[in-house]
Image (cartoon, rainbow, N blue to C red; front, top):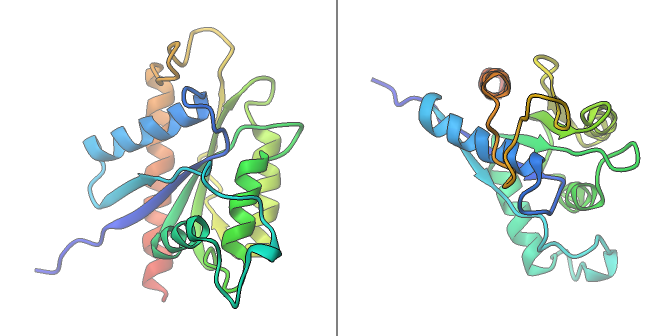
Length: 193
C-alpha cells in the first residue's frame, strides 16, 4: 500500500505582533490541521528575522544566512498559507519583503499553491488579499479562489480572546474549509508535475 502524500504548508503572517489576530488564525490553522486533517502539516515561519531586501547583501549568488534559511523553507514547501492583515489598503512591509527575497533568482515560489486568510476591521483585510493575488501572478503562485476568509475581528461576537487566540467556532469551521481546499489544490498541482 502506497504511503499517503503529506502536504507541507508554510504559514506566513504579515503581522509581527505576537498576539495579532492574523497570527491567531495561523495558530488555529495549525491546531485544526493537527487535530482533524490527515496528510497535511503546517509550519509557521517567522518573518521578523529577515533583513530588508537589498541586492548589496547578495554576494556571488548567495544570500544572507537568514534569507538562505527562509528561501530553503519556501523551496521545500508544497504550498503556503498567508495571514495577511491590511495596512494602508495593501499587504504589510514584512510580508512583501519576504515575498521579494524568495522571488530573487531562482524564484522559489513558482508553480505552488497558496491560500489567504485575514482578520481586521472594515473589509477584514480584503484589499490586502487583492494585492497579494496580484503579486502572486508575477511570482507564479496559484491561489485557491474559494472559500475566502475575511474575519471582521472587531465586530460582535468576539472572534479572538485578549491573547489573539481564535475562539469563534464558526470562524474555525470556515478556516478548516480553507485548509481542505488548499490541500486538495496542492495535491492536484503536485499530480501534474
